[in-house]
Image (tube, rainbow, N blue to C red; front, side, top):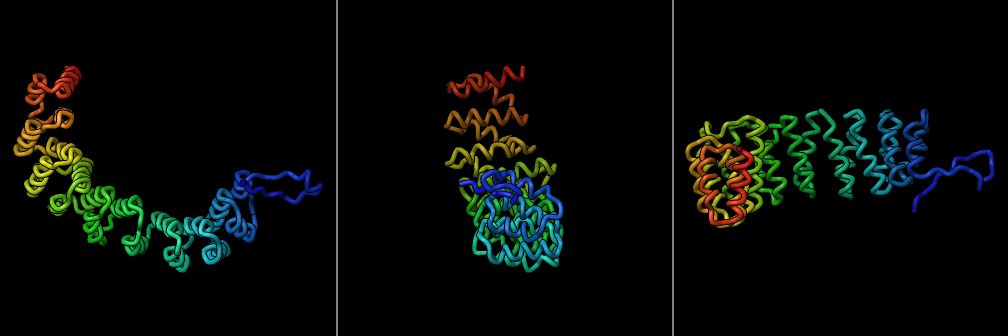
Length: 324
């Protein structure tokens, strides 16, 4: 049930104007010179919108009194209030807030720890990256682990490269993809060999995620795999993936094979198309070859127009009409 807040007015209680949670939260954000005691009470005892507004107001103040109010919330309030408080830690002086960072990151409630981690993303200090590294192995959410990896890539955190490499063996495909792109962001072409090794030892969705990460990152970084000394290592795992029993892995691998400009890559695309027994996947291979303008694309299109498989033939007709 929604809680209401009644200002004390010079009229009978039954005629007093009552504010909804949203209205009270809005007032908190716009009132000037509001007491820290009021904000602390609203943070600890208010409903969700009110807690958030109170915490943000304390973050805007970012003075010693506001920091003390957040400390009180982190020590003695509900998990929801502690979460709101932790999310605002980035607004305060880094050194002065150290005890609060330690408290929030060690909180028994995972939502409080998560809020503190998100707050760390907003700090520029190298020590903030180190704190993320200290917490990384304990983070339960694959999405948050992936976000930490991507944050390290944005900040050029090569110092934590060992954790990035280890994340290639994460059970979550989402994290594997983030680890692959982060490794390329940090090491550029030097990441190709360890990525090939990781994709070789992983299976199923994890292998597909690493290959997708290689494709995505080499594209936006402008890395020409076909000119790399590690091209064969990448093509070895692409060839393995094109024979994978899982269709999604084969679908992912064909993007790399069709994108890499190398005679062996061209041969892999042709062989994959002709060896594919699933008409849906075969049609997909044709689509990728045409979309990426693979050298063998026109030859495959001509073959597909004569295919006995309706799915493949129909795809070929659509693609040929687009090219006309």
